[in-house]
Image (cartoon, rainbow, N blue to C red):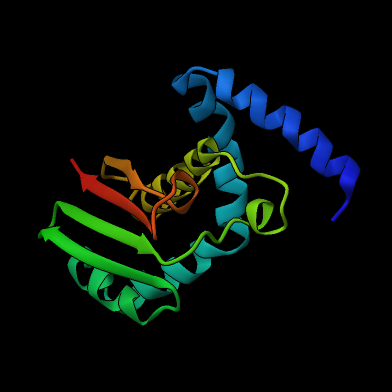
Length: 144
């Protein structure tokens, strides 16, 4: 780990803690898009195609992915997405530990589902995260 980078990110964590939620959303929406475009969007897009765009089947099928599981709460409308650990490289490399970083994950999930179903409106709520002290990350996705 680069100690200079770690030191820089300490200041970054302090700055994001002082931001308003809307400011964090704006910052992390771009970060979340970049992260999703490099990795998870392709995985989810492939699965989405295999289930012919059916979100209920998608959230059942995602249980086959390592470290991820889905749950249908209200068919066609509300779902839970769980991650058994934090998959963020910035955290796993030891640079960031702030729970405010989880806004990036929320924005990433929001971006993915807006990309998969651009004609629909989605909301994503962070219910619990590893960085908040939880055993896993839980996001609730609602299609309006």
